[in-house]
Length: 376
Image 1 (cartoon, one colour):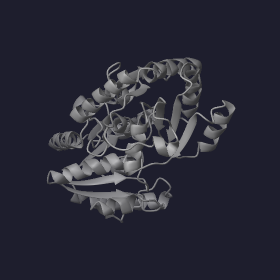
Image 2 (cartoon, rainbow, N blue to C red):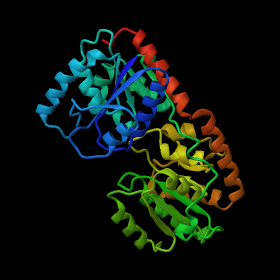
Image 3 (tube, one colour):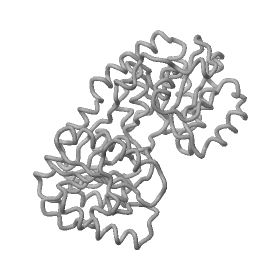
């Protein structure tokens, strides 16, 4: 099978890592994979993928910032290029729209989209989703929404879990407590997320202020970067949390795993561009229990009361903060229980969220879609 991966981004973020992981797994199973990414904007994605050994094409602009002339050229080129592949696999809405329009006469070729984020569920996406031969969702709830909202045949939609490398993210290893000046006895809650509006940092700050009323030695560690940092720092000052909240910056590789080990509890407040919520899986692989919302992938990843806690983060702000604070106090005040839940979390992701399992599931679905007639 020959697969062309489309990803209209110039940076190694969001769906880039899961796309590369799936592509590696397909290659390991004997398939040929080429990749096309945003060729107009500056970023590290092309170099990263090339360094991993992928063939990265340079004949598509594939940019959401491209003008109409570049888009028309991409349509013409993709119509020609597509004939050399069995599957064109889109990872963003821009990719999917281009593929559906350019490859209307598909013959043996099939167009598949992985929907990494719930933002692709807007009703205006319906015509494009219905003209796509196969849709991959990151969880069962998203798959159900696709079938019901857009009236898509059930066999053309599949839910495939996210994945984490449990050899990289392990409970054993260094943490960042000494570097960050955190006492070994201090209970620590952490968040790993881009700092921007919509990621829930303000609600987490307010909830943490309530936690400190019960656990004054607790610390909140924020890992990440983004345009929302000034607003976050302002919120820390307004709530008088300067000595209790630590901004640990952007961490990758071994430092990221060490950051997870610094936490007693990991919090995920909102879905990002990667709806599998990879930071949640990474923390669980490091043996940390998680607190997150019950919708989407977290609701299927966390076993409430066993590997973490599920809370309602979609209601009134005051209720969100109160419920989140209760869950945090529950776990931070009983570190032995939190550790036991973390071990259960590690066992769960090691059993059900491996890259090999995800790669095999994608391979099966692509084979199934290729056996179906092209969608009308």
